[in-house]
Length: 283
Picture 1 (spheres, rainbow, N blue to C red):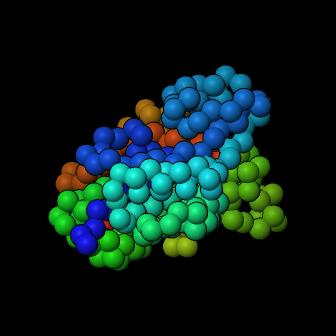
Picture 2: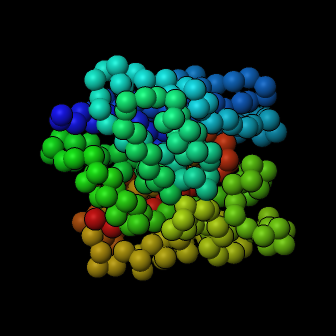
Picture 3: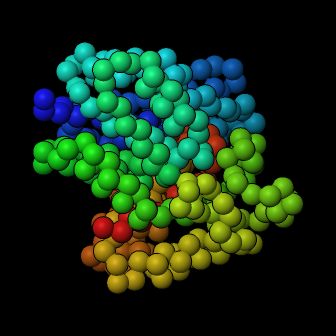
């Protein structure tokens, strides 16, 4: 029997803000703002969310991942649509429980081959895996071949993160760091990065935002020298700043594609306004 491959991705990838030429299904987290629930992208989009938290800096913000039952119903839909195999790409398991939920949901659906891939990344890093999966499906590749390829690419995605304040990351437990280190970090502008296992950790401690930004550009330029890469910049309420960094990088590397992408509200709720994620994929 020939395979018909379906694709599922979580909303943390930001694919809602892109046009994908394939019927990809989304599993979306919920944003809780002052006790009111919003489904990511459906009820609230990036611009609106960042404006809201800028205007109400003390608003109570939390998120909840998609329920296992809801994920299972997405699998059921695909099965009803005639898909035999489903590739599910989710945010790093070190940043969310979505991976675990997607695995558990497999057990609730019979007669469907479900493969859950921990992207070990977020935002455009995750979206890129989906874009590549679509390309390979269209080329007629088998599910196992696609999974193998995506796992290889996953090891070549690098992300650095500049946050305006660590308040949000610390409050939501998304930063993998020792508490002793956090005390000193809260007073400065740290440069963070996502490690190979998908956890977000401090990269360097820097005193000011402008120095952190300069250092980020320096690190990026060193890392991508003589490499074929795609660069992406995920912004919150600072698209101008993202554009400025893009322009600086393009002066040095005119040959590189640089994607500007909004950071979805659910990810932004943990990172906070003023956050910029700058990453690259070795291709």
